[in-house]
Length: 235
Length: 257
Image (cartoon, rainbow over all chains, first blue to last red; front, top):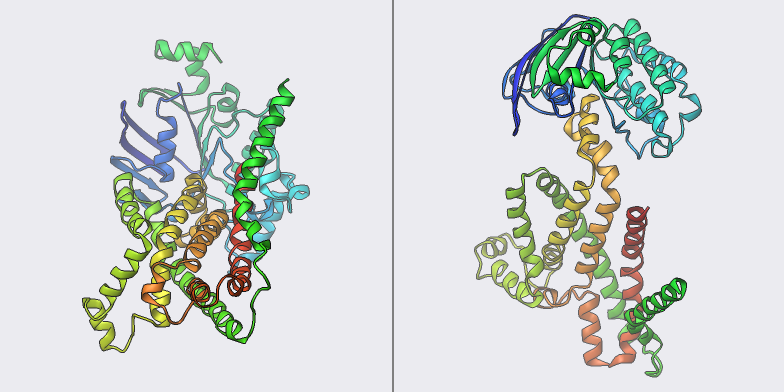
């Protein structure tokens, strides 16, 4: 489904990665801050452009040439919820959903399901600028899922949240990934997040290079480099 | 001790504000009965109509041309942006009288464009067209520079998220960028409006007729003296000051929030 092999030259080093991801599969990216994990996601999302290589998603070429952001069937969730502050919660969730078309009733029913499952009904008419950080993450998740993207990119969306909320959001993500069948690439520093969202496949990056691949439990038990061992010891 | 220092500072600031607003007290100056007879009233009301109508047309042109230009500049890299900003500064920094003379020469029978316009029957001196065109020149730089700052203040990541949610660049502009920049754009427009509607130096050269408020104020001052100026001055302040003032106060409130 996703087949990506690309290089992105940064000022300090080059990020070189190759990724193959099937439908409804997930992979984690782990490494120290500044190792290039977010760059990988930004290149797949189209926020940044690789300098070399190719990215294909389900028969659609994302790069090269670089496909416009609005044409990419990709969900992107970041640490900052980036809600549209001039809109209500409901308007944020339905922002990317076409308002017309034959499948509109179906879309409305899907939005209602999201609203119910993510407990957004009490907030629905509130201004997105006036809700709490935790609520904003739930709204951002609903907004991303409203379009049912086949690929979801998660760039530390749980950072700074309390454990209970993280657990709930992960439960929701696992539930939706089974319901919709999307694939996931997860960047996170938290072991329990990787353990739950992508236990079978994690890629470790150091200075933009892949230094280890495998199940998260294997990586934890046999880290390939001294830096990784140090990082894991700090978890 | 700290409290008393703060009060001294506050009193100082209040004195500063009073000094700043002091010229407005001249509205109550003892200059005798204000003159508002037919001789003054007719041209004064006509100048209000001219200023309001033609400045509105000028501002519509400024917004229609200036907004896409500002959107383009806001997306330029630093070097190119500096170039455009330097260009926009030229009409802003030109002394108004110099701008008026240059404008008359360039768009009059001596300029290439002027000859062409004259051939098509478009008079670029002492006409409504000349009035509007001068105001567009006077206000454009202020609007575009302010609009660039307003568009810059919209977080780029919000626009990228909107695009990733399937919106084309045009839709992102209208549904995200424009609503979030609207107050800044209103402030930019209000500055352009105040600058254009109050313009005297350039307009008096390019469009003495039809007379807008500043030119009429000057004519009244020369012909009848201060009592004849005051009614039009009050109207001038009433139609130019409140809306831009409100836009600025709202913008300040938001940036202070």
